[in-house]
View 1 (tube, rainbow, N blue to C red):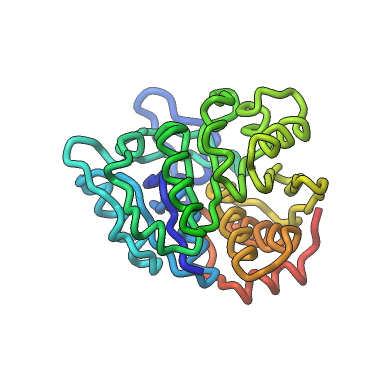
View 2 (view 1 turned 90 degrees about the vertical axis):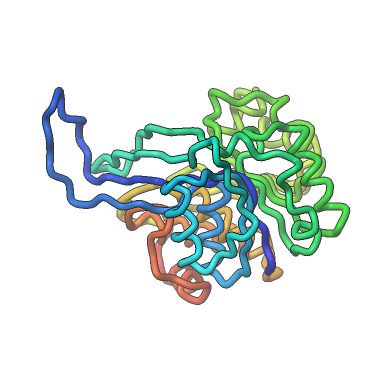
Length: 308
């Protein structure tokens, strides 16, 4: 699998556990503070690399120390960062995540350079030469730009997938409609399906996205597992029963596992099982890069652990 992950790159600063922010100049001790690469492109790239894919990642970051650290973390994970563009006038995107004891993760986010990525930045030849293109956060670069990139990939026989970034409450159908005919696998969460489809029912919303051109819609639903929607019907895949430490990056890990499964010729259900296993492995620690697992370990986890 030769994949280009394109789109959102973020440096996450995770603090755990945080029950409340101290008032005034107060302070409190925590157990852990970590910095990790994250985002719908970078986070997915991390797990794809663990699962044995050859990964190149593309997007916009700054020339600031935050960007330097982000590149270093991706390089260390075995990801080719040569397609990243560096902005001198814009900061690298970053997020501070105070992780609650139950795994919830409110966030303080800096958009940064991600929204500056455009057609002049796209490595068209690298996209055409890949077997897979995963575009994360197309709503940040605009539906028309995203559609152009995905159409180019499809014209060269590249398998395409898309994950969304914005919460459903900020989504509108026109933000994604133009790109859907060029998407083989759409990988949103349930909140995003409802928001971006502008429907009140999850299945109705997923079918609307399918009817607009997406080949398959795989909806993640947290502890309720995944819902697969195709023209042939629907299927549910349960999540694994684990003790959750942090849900950061779980959606990206599911995307990576699902896409790696597809690249290996597995059925959509089998691919979703691998995606759920990867998400469960990531959720047991802090940050998008948690877990020293590979494809064999993820498959073993899926075969030996109970589902909810």
